[in-house]
Length: 181
Image (cartoon, rainbow, N blue to C red):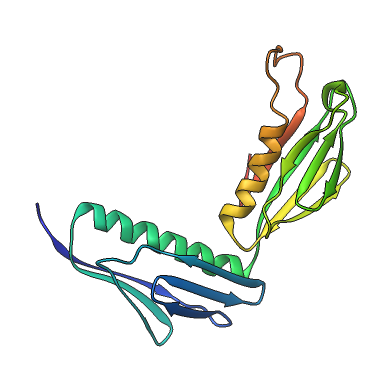
């Protein structure tokens, strides 16, 4: 088992403020604030000038993976407070017109496949949802929250026990963060 010194550095852009408190890292920017707790055992995290350095003097393969994951999460947090992550979904209805009503942290999907009872979908707390005719736009400073909100809409309108070639109704993700699908 070989052990090497690992050092990852993340640059902090102008207008973004980072605070490190033991296991919690708070990132503030023009679009909002992100905070997250990380498992920092065996890692040395420091903020020097306009950089965050994550260091381990003798890292195993597992610790290298953890450092890389940690770095990816931090980069996403910094990106999110600069420009919110955005997902777009399309409401596709072939048989019955679908209507969506938002009540607090729940979305009611009415008349899906002609069902009498509306389907319910949870909306995470920091997600902003905007409905414009047949396009749903989800924005959040946290990439995971925006992605989970979009996934909740897709899961709520999953069609089971029917032929998918005929029943093509549903709500589908058409645009992820920077990617058209």
